Length: 219
Image (tube, rainbow, N blue to C red; front, top):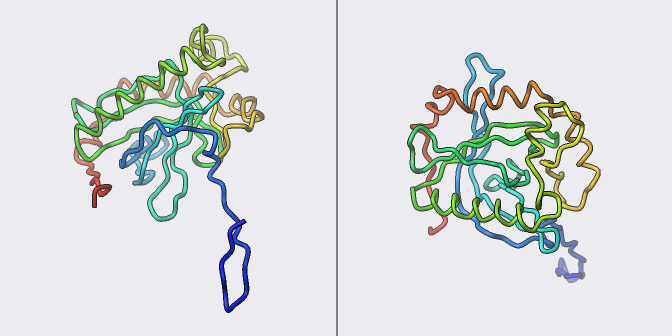
């Protein structure tokens, strides 16, 4: 364990784990993240945070997580798995922003479906993220035991109200298997349908057109 010297005394410094030791970073970029709040009147996009967003691939399980932490506080504002069926959709023709739905995000310490949007400083970074995201989907679809050779469980969830769901994020660690069962308490047929409805509504993404994010990673 590392030691620091304080007033001549040696003090043990405890190393804090970020629970990413078993994962490999596929990409890391600065961005600004938003969630769509359909409960507001009127419904609106709300900022979740600005910071570095990463795709993390597990070394043995071949799962891939989207993890984003806010600047300075490092508090998580996005934490969910990538599935082979997730789709990044452009924001009203913008070349810098993407919109996508998640059945189970754990950023708020509670599994729940979200409609998220992410905006990058420029088109180049947005394209890099899109390419990496597609690679992550391919990895998960072909090499992850949960998804390889299987049909879309999200469709089954909506059609039959099944109590099984594979799109689940863990609190901080990718080894907490108990989270798998908890997602079903938060995801319902109505909540999934609501996400699909707002995804197809042009007004939902119009609010992102003038939102800016600056890339300070090179400074």
